[in-house]
Amino acid sequence: MTDTQIGSFIRDCVVFEDDTEDGLDFDTFYGLYISWCVLGRKIPIPDSAFKTALELEGHKPVKENGRRIYPGMTMVGPAARDYVVNSVPMWSETATDIPVSEIRQQAVASIA
Image 1 (tube, one colour):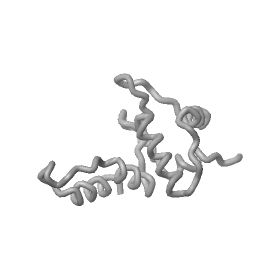
Image 2: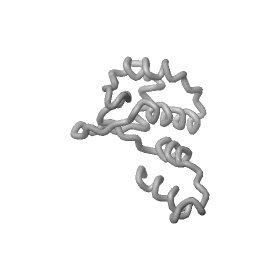
Image 3: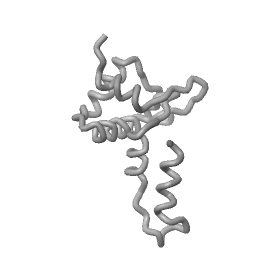
């Protein structure tokens, strides 16, 4: 069987939990994929092709509150950390009681 880029991405970045209704929404899933591509110096496919590739790998979303959710999926690994760190809004320390460095540390620790 030939390995696909999406198959490698899923093995590297996603764990499945059958006993949860939580999952990844499409935008987060695609953002995670982009982080994985950047870290691995791969050329990402467009989001529409990504959706099709996920379906070909047997992953179909369910609609939940108007969003496409891939149930049971949780992101892990270096690409997940990269995605979270780069997705945290850049607040100034005057806008919150918590220092920005602590917010980043908490975000990274939550997926480590």
